[in-house]
Amino acid sequence: MCAAVSAGGGRAAARRLGRAGGAAGASRAQGTAGVPRRSKRRKSIAIAYESGQGDGAEQGMSEPQRPRWEPRAWRQQLERIREMRRKRDAPVDEMGVEKCYDSSAPPQVMRYQVLLSLMLSSQTKDQVTSAAMLRLRQHGLTVDRILQMDDATLGQIIYPVGFWRNKVKYIKQTTAILKQKYGGDIPRTVEELVQLPGVGPKMAHLAMNIAWDSVSGIAVDTHVHRITNRLKWVKKETRYPEETRAALEDWLPRDLWREINWLLVGFGQQTCLPVNPRCNECLNQDICPAAKRR
Ligand code: SF4
Image 1 (cartoon, rainbow, N blue to C red):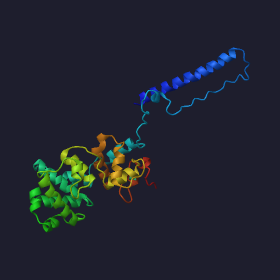
Image 2 (cartoon, rainbow, N blue to C red; image 1 turned 45 degrees about the vertical axis):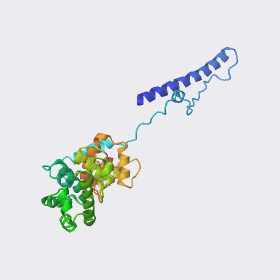
Image 3 (cartoon, rainbow, N blue to C red; image 1 turned 60 degrees about the vertical axis):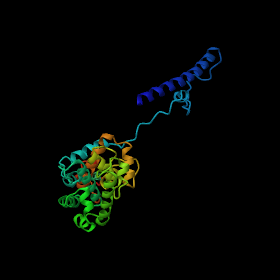
Image 4 (tube, helix red, strand yellow; image 1 turned 120 degrees about the vertical axis):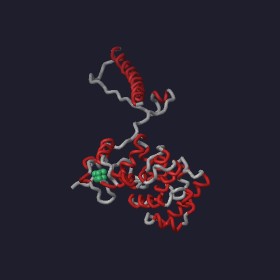
């Protein structure tokens, strides 16, 4: 694409230079006709690139596209984060959603358990979510079993996950919808997933990824939101995770969308903490715009 733009610009410039050359040629012709020259100093020729008069406009072509914006040094920063995450020993590695479901259960049950662990994980530490999932699984974590369970029992089992009272309500409502509308399975589009009570965009993208093995978008949680703003991986500062998701999806190569959540969540749990990030231990300290240097 760049080469084509360059070639087009070259042709336009050459054409204009041709016109300018014609004027200069006329001037030379005058000189040879005997008109006395005032000065032997060569005059510079101003070449104006007027909008809408280039080759593209003449041939009905669109404006050449500018190269897509991308953050400075992002590949180097990413590589160093991978290095810092090499041991895979953050809470998300040991107790994240991917470790919470029963991998020997039928696929439909596994997908339901993935969705439930995502619902429980919001505003909750991985350790607490993991323990609640373990207790739920001991009671039998299926759509039918949850529908049979009374709210008080469900509340006792999932306590102390964050906002557990609301989560009891959302889990019951969502499970009833799954039973009635999706035959007990979870939907397989982000649009349908976010319609379920208590399911937000981050959960929907993670559910698509983990339960359906499909990359639908970047899952932006509080860690991804914070770290990408610190590293200036967003063109201008973003205020909400959904803004961050759109800003990242604009430039980050799609083959990294799956990895980036896992990578940055663990990095945020161990090094780039919300308060007092451990910049002195961070391999990106010399190339991070937000680094605290002593
Ligand atoms: S240098 Fe500090 S703020 Fe920057 S990525 Fe590392 S830990 Fe985070």
